[in-house]
Image (cartoon, rainbow over all chains, first blue to last red; front, side, top):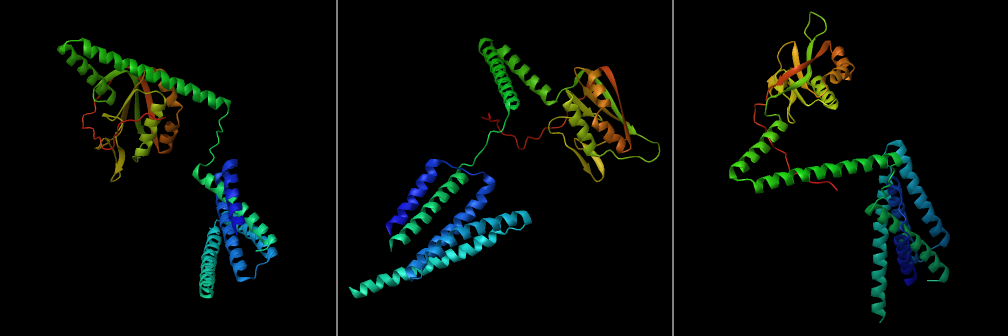
Length: 117
Length: 230
């Protein structure tokens, strides 16, 4: 359970230490990619708690969502439509949903374990 | 959680952390690349040197003024202040000025219908004159100062809130090198602009020109103490 959290912290530290910065024009794409990644991660946690987790789906979803979101943003820029809003909306709604489900699952697990004891 | 799953989660979390950190850094202190080449750097250096010199001169000037205040007796103190005030008034355009310069007259190009002198034309002409090192300018007897409004009110052009008179409109310009200024005006963009508006501008140098003073109160509305930019 703690290993992913540790990995997240390692990633953050690596990112801050490496001082990588991307040009401001591309920060939109990265922000949307971050959102997609967050969504996938929480989706994965939810699937894990519900017991229908699949590695392939998780990994492919992670990369595919990131690419799709960035591609959507890119297409939007070239068409003059703020298509990235669609991605933000979709991912945002799903993020909330996933977190809500995770919360319910955790609470029900917790109350179950209390009943047993 | 089995091993493989843990590894997958960790990998994804690590990538996410990396992306978050990069995004955070990018938004908080974005990349500002110095894209100046050697010549631009040189020019900038030159500019900074010039600024330093200007500042030094200014310091010297005020130091001298201060010395003057401190050393002299009371009467002379007042004189020194008076002189400083006069200098400032002269700079602001509140005094009559005379010297060599050119007189530009604006007239209709063709006989018949009277063309309109748009404020934009005069504004462009004044900008161009200033670009060619004009010292002081008056248009149609109105001295142009920093805050002079030139605008259209009800289809008429107003300068210093006075309607412009009928043709010929006289623009007096003081300059250190009248001949050069005249040559530049002949070949200027504004001259062509005036012709396009069916107006004709003619200029001739004069050895002795007198510009009227600005006689209205100067409204200082948005003035702030100047801050030295770093």
